[in-house]
Image (cartoon, rainbow, N blue to C red):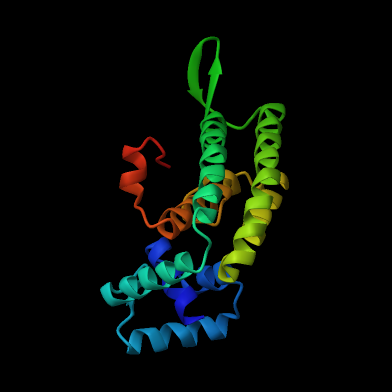
Length: 205
């Protein structure tokens, strides 16, 4: 769990132990113990808003990602990331439609009082989710520590369908958009590039 924890912390920035336990599909007690060991080694730091990877922890996470990348066949990860970027363009448009509606030619914030409209957007997310499933299956087989992404997406979508609409795009919580952002960051780093470089290439989040 040591390596997976540092990668997760480096991607999240800051995280509470309970969020790490869910993201890693790990026992909460094991997470706490791992964090304490990482802190003792100087790889993780405890702050008022949660745990974060230290400079040496981020370097260790980068080495883990580089090792994982080196174990994949040339072009394999590039192809997977290319498939993701196509889905990402669709997902960005869906999130925009979730947040902003066009009524009478005017863009207004979506107040979520139109259940039919929101259900249509949720249907669009489910369509993307079905296509994402194949990529996640490949990713979890190629890099087993990424397997919890599938469960995190499923939980967010299930909560949204139950009427907890914040699980579509709210920050901080494990909303569908939050998990998507983290998966995107994961793929960017696995590919050996940066979000800034991706944005310059027109593939920003």
